[in-house]
Amino acid sequence: MIVRQSLPSAGVREAYLRYARDRPDLAGVLLPALLPHEVCGAVPPRRVKVLFVAESPPWAAGGREVAGPADCADPRYPYFWNDRYEARPVRGPLSGGLAENLFCLLGLTGRSRRENLDLFSGRGCYLVDTIQCVFRKNRRPAIPSDLVRLSAREVLGRDLAALAPEYVVALGNTALAGLRRLEPYAGALAGAEQVTAIPDALRDALLEEHHLLCLPYPGGRNRRYLDRIASGFDLVGDLAT
Image (cartoon, rainbow, N blue to C red; front, top):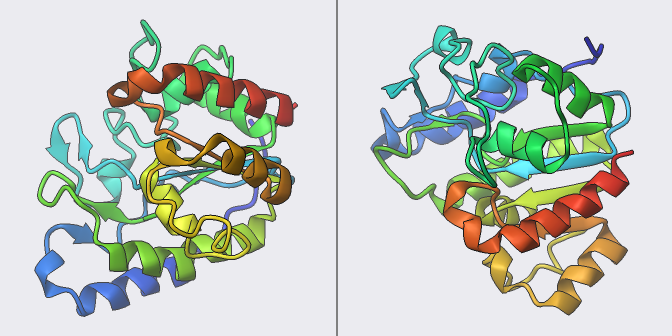
């Protein structure tokens, strides 16, 4: 098992609790005190070569809404850092959940979620969500832009500063929206709202100048972008060696 040190969660929880007090319309949708990365013991490697930024933790375990810490440790909860999760074998490109798709794209062949997480960390990789508390997208599909803005400035920005990754990989449009609000990416990403609409020249410049790679979210709904996703992960594999 890889030995790591966790990032503090008190400030993260307080930021979301403060936001929730001003957004009573999100009662029952946003669970500001439920931080799956804390429950699951997600801790970074000593040297972070590649930091993946995703959207938000899953809202369900086995088809049932998560409501408390015990749910986040449920073997049916597919959260990336839940090493108890009983994943089904990936039977085709982008046919699994986020974690299994990432492991497949990176060529990790552990026999369990736990083994693959250790291999992932052993390569100097880490993953955080733009929104780090649970947001029940079954009740409200779109994450509010002011929540993304708060998360970027008060949570994701601090993670980037603390982790000091050599490269950052944005997985999908919510991650892009969060990074667009942070330096040194804000200027270069001005006006970029869709990962798939970023011109090749800008994508190359982002990688060369800012060590930032923007990819479509590696899930089944984006199979039409499989070539772009796979080529991006080939590059990530070279970076994380």
